[in-house]
Length: 120
Image (cartoon, rainbow, N blue to C red; front, side, top):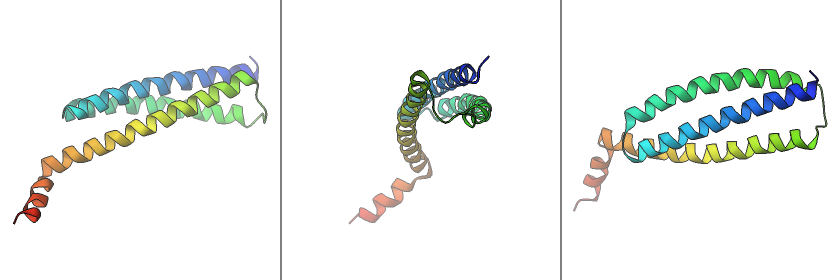
């Protein structure tokens, strides 16, 4: 198998892994919007397993990427697609972080302290 074939296979595996993560993150988002913290935590465990798999793929990718400077268009397209998915993933994770912080604030009673400050 050529280096380019190996590279494309690894990039396709990474694309699948990132797509799985984005599905999980969207489910987490829905769970957090419905205040289902336990479900969000469970989903996070699944996400961590896929991230570990992706870490191994990245180690192999680094070996393949270091050997070549210029890639065919289909390889470039795979890389662009992965980066696009990561941008979407980052945006959803930011929203999840905000939702989680709001849930934690509710559970800690932080809003109560804020309400007391605004009382007259």
